[in-house]
Image (cartoon, rainbow, N blue to C red):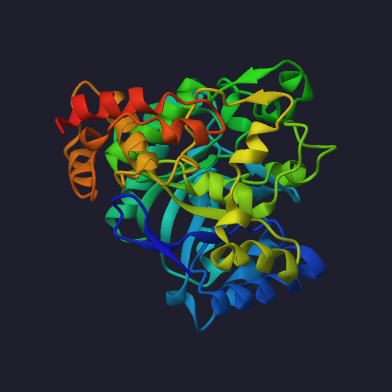
Length: 382
C-alpha cells in the first residue's frame, strides 16, 4: 500500500481508503469483514458519513482493539431522527448527534471531523456564522477532533471553504464525468442524463481551480464517488457512453492535484479487494487516456490529463509533472513557494526542451506540449 500526505495535516493515509456504503450489508456483519480486509491490505483510512446507529455501533465494535490502526473521517451534522438520516445545522442537534456518535464508535476522538454535505453558498455562510464552525473549532481545541473537514459536491462552495482557511480536508466527488459539469447546488445534476446529452469539452474551470487551490494551500482531498455510484463501470449507465474500469477511475482521481485518498465503496470483501488491487495493477491496467479519447459524448481535446502518454521525452523531462506544476502556478499571480520547490526537485526542467515534437505525436488529446514547456520555462525561469 502506498501512503500519501493528507494536505498539511501530518497524517499519512493509504491512497486507497474505505467508504462506508457496504457496512450495513448482511445485518451490519459486513462491517467487521471489511475492516479485517482493510487491515490486511494496509488500508488505514475510512469515511463514515452515515448516521445509522446500527452501522456506527458495528464500526465501533470493528475498531475495538485496533482503533490506532485506522484514521477515521467521521461526519458532523449527520444525525439520526425518527428512524432515518437527517442533515442538520441546528446546533443542539449537531452537538447531541456528535456526542452520541463518539459513544457508538467507542472512541474519544475523531481524526477528521467532517462538516457534512455543504453544496450551497447560503449553507456555507450558515456554517460560518451560525455556530457550527465555532463548535467544530472548539472540538479541535479540546482534542476531540484532530482536524477539520468538509464534504461537498459543489466546486464553488468548496473553494470558498478552502480559501477561508477554516478546513484542512475536503471530501469531494472526483471522476472524469463529474469534472466536466459546472457547479450546481443540486447534487442530482451530477447524474442527470440530460446534462450529458450534448458534447462536453474539457474540465470545468471551477473544478480545476478547486483542485489546484487545495494543492497550493495544503488542503488534502479525499475522494468520494470515484466510480459515480458504479455508473462509470457500466457502458449503458456511464454518462460518457463508455465503461471505465475501477483501476482507471482510481488512477484518474489520484492524478488530480491535492488528492490523497480515494474512498472505495464496496458491498463485499471481493469488491473492496478489487479496488485494493489497484496497488499492484500494471501501468496498462491503470491507463485511462485511450479510453477517454474514445468517449463519444465527452472530449478532453487540448487538455492535459497528466496521463504520461507523451513519455518518454528525449531530454528525460517529466512532462506530466511539469505541466501540473505549470497549471498550479498559472492559478496564482505569483508562483507558490511549494510549487517552485517541487519544480526545482525535478531531475530535468522545461527549459531543456528542444522542441522536437515527439511528445505531441503520442498525446491522445492533441495538447500543445511544446507551448506548455515554453510557458513553464518562462514561469519558473529555467
